[in-house]
Image 1 (tube, rainbow, N blue to C red):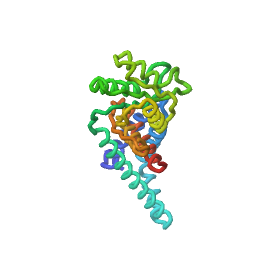
Image 2 (image 1 turned 90 degrees about the vertical axis):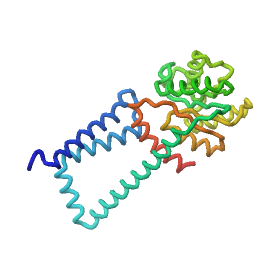
Image 3 (image 1 turned 135 degrees about the horizontal axis):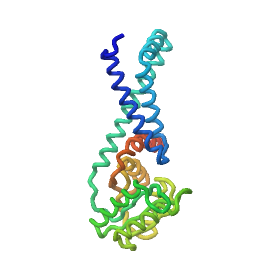
Image 4 (image 1 turned 30 degrees about the horizontal axis):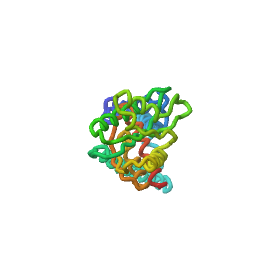
Length: 259
């Protein structure tokens, strides 16, 4: 067997790519993030690496399976499943990218969706959502904002309070900020914020601010609730994007099936 055959060179290249992909999805684990996104990503690239390493054994296994009727059905069925999943992920990604690129017009009420708080400080992801909201509120001084997010068991203050503090420090007038500090999910963010809009007689033309990967699901939920909503994408931490993006495929699919 030639060491530098085309097959072996391709195996080596795909092995390097697989190891790199595994590390990309592993990295968030070191800051406490482990979800469907990086779990599936790590599993995919771990399997890819093993296939590259044991390629001769893998091809022999496939040959044996294809020589039997049930084995052939299993292999073809698996390939069909892979293609369907790939197409579905591609469709979701196109929709997500389209919403990220949509233009943010002037709206009366801004809703900022919460994210993790570290002690009493916004996480990097939450800080970027706050900064996007501040920029929007400075551009449109007539708009008001609802900061939405409850307090988790490992958070020193509610996500809404963390957002309110940062906004006031950055010069947003306190009377423009309304707090919703009871929600524990995106759906509750929106439903509880709608109630505040009703109670405080706020105008119902809204813009929802969250990170780009999350925007499609938030807008879909808003539409299902009858909200007149547009979206504004906050910048995502780049090295967290692969994990967040893959996780959102599952979350979006669950939303489409449940609402």
